[in-house]
Length: 427
Image (cartoon, rainbow, N blue to C red; front, side, top):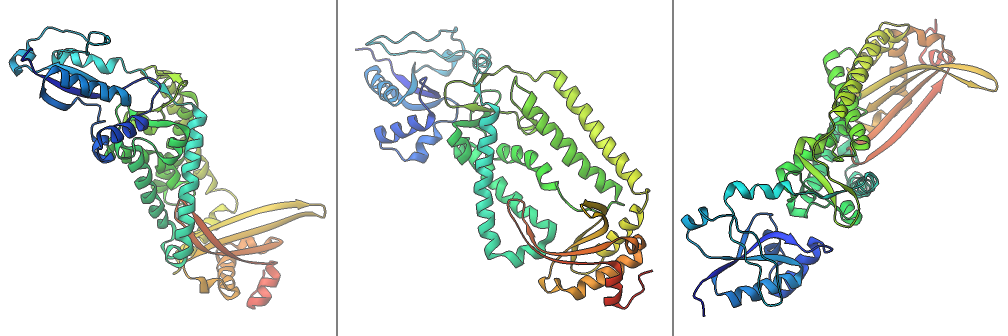
């Protein structure tokens, strides 16, 4: 009998047609190992399962792993100096009685393994449906939290969105990483997962959190109410919402070669299918996409900023802007918006001014507070006196990003009626 000893090495390879989850379950059952210990050997790096054993025993381990759907290699034990000078000897095919024996390749040649990584990418609709499912789950969680902490969230105002952002980063960050096997609940149902672009391995928690942060930033900023006179903040908001958001959707839809949007490109990740089908991966994003995306961003951001700048100097907009600033400077008013327009019906047209404020105290949802708002409106927005109607909406509630809850009080009168109530002049 030969005295040569062998190591049993597992590098994360599994048989075609089986999923990682199935293989892990079989290994847990076969070797009576804790699930968390089994997951630790699926890192994509070579792990020594058993060292310095004779060939018959090594073969038993190899067959047991193959029965579970995992592919092991049997490597002769050699001194480090001998291993480094080995000429490249590739794997021999299994026969009925012979094991697969692989001698280690030099480090430079081992890098070529990642070049052969060619997964099947997830389709567009699988990713959309997975995100929709995850959003529903987070929305339910947010609604439950909102039910118990309505008043506390209401006092946070627009900063409450950070709560939902943190919850979403924890959810997507943990489950899309190696901790969750690269799958959120939605991805698991759609049979897709997130992997490293370079080698197909599962990604780390920090990388997964960074990936979702890039994705959620446009969603977090969308709908924020900011003063129009702060040009720097308006520029940053426009750049994030329309610039990043525009690139996000453009690449999602049109980058068919790698199916990577800006969050995947930032984290160098791919979303692949666990089942047959999907689009074959072709490394490298077509450069034309960058040109189109950047041009669209420049057009949207530039046009938006120019439009806002021009609008602030047109018609009654300057006085509406002044009124917004005055209202937002009041205590317990978290946000304010002023809109002037015309509605049409069978009886003709009706002009109106609509003032909406978000308050942090539900006691402010009264006609008395609405009267104070009207007084400010008459003072800083004189054009409202010439409209047919003046509508004041006082809103109390919360927006934590993953869920919202609002209570509204509406007060609608003609300017003359408001003036009578407040004993003011309507002219």
